Length: 445
Image: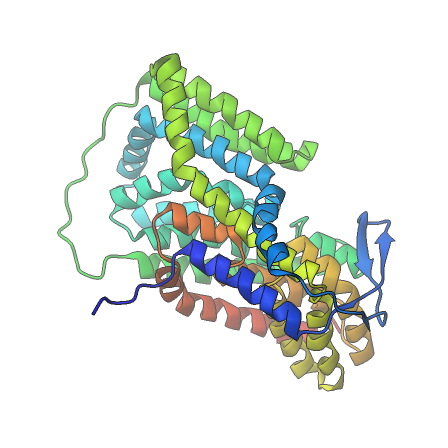
């Protein structure tokens, strides 16, 4: 008898699309009234304005059409994944990537753990500042080479990069898509709670990094081989590496200083990819062929991101998202403050599954969580913290997070293997979040 295998990522997301369609028949349609918030330029919901509306069931045809619609909505990210991924594929084929990784490992041959800590710190900082996530998809070839050369579990390397970035975003006091927009919506000073967030950002980073390094070590003790210097980098490969790493720095600067979007980032790395191919003596045709091969490696990761958006589209068409939020938040009003805060955290975690956009979740839920905090006599900071922690944590697990699903798919890691690997570490960090929320009840009195 053939053994059943765990569903493919595409099957998982298509199943979520179908489940969302079924839920649209079972859950009443409802909506909150909304108004434009001049501070954020976004529409926010009005407290107490929820009302049920006449249900218009989504047809099977509309559900199926939502699949290509989701891909179209995610086209800007898909293009970024293709162009950025193609660029890194070209860099890999020039041999510069392998040479750079070998050189890096040789320099840290007696301090591999320090190298992994620096790796985690760099991505945690990227998550804390620019909420780096989809951009990591195209870096997967680099991570695979690094894991292979370090003889380290690729899942742990993903945890030290993607996981650190997502938690960096979740704990960050300065993330514009999470904490800062939450502070604005809660009508709090942006600097308020900065020290508190920094303390738990540090604690979360240290715990997560230690757990990932510990989990990624080979289970069987391997014979330690003498590490010798790798191939000479040379000026061509050195220039390619400078262009590649410099592109990441320029991308971060453009996002923070010039409000770059996906198109600007895509254009930057297209130029970098072509330049690296020519510098690496691949030739014009060779660079084009290699870039095209990079597209084929990355296309599935881009499709995964689009399918994740299809799930949200179906829920939105069924007009049941507001009903779910109303159902989760309403019972919290009758709870003692400690239980209400824990309940709010759990509710925000559940909401992040159908609403995988961090900024979208803030806009949907903060205006509803703030009056709840006021009613219970709790600082509004708790409304922001519960949302921030929950979205950061759930991004590591939720199959509706297209960025995470695309990264593990590109790395050849099955979703069930990823969950099995990361769940214990995730629970430890979740406990730190709950501890932070309980202490915050006293800290922000």
